Image (cartoon, rainbow, N blue to C red; front, side, top):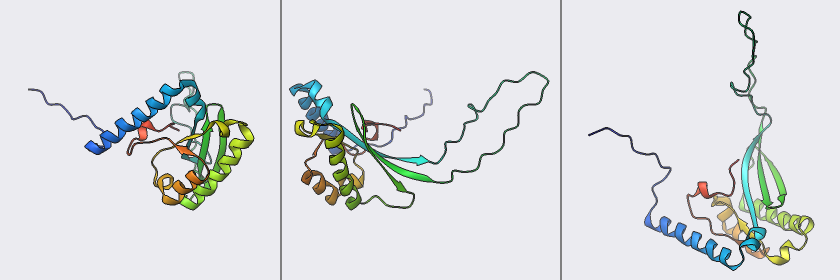
Length: 177
């Protein structure tokens, strides 16, 4: 016998969660069967990320060549980030449609997200003429603010159709910053 370590997995899925993944995948495959090129033009993606006021240089990036026998270059300690912002970004296959920034400590609520969806609708009409008429499929993760009653009602009221995103599926998120 040999001693082995268990493989780390982020979450153990219940049978219901596994079934939701299968159903989400089948739904997307059905959409692709209708018109595979058109579906990619319809998908619009949104996500949030923290943006720091600066990005510190890593130890690997700060390495320099120097001659043997000479003193290594001095590197001063960099101060911590002055601050950070939450960026909410929406894009499609042609590029970025909308970027919105929130200061640290300001919560993103369902009401705020509802207003953001209105701005997104206007950005689509301005930057992607004709896209709205073809239909827009909104692909976003299952963050609580995206699934709140206020945000879901605003999404339907503004005419967005949502693609299913199974719970606890961050690796299926449309992007990774």
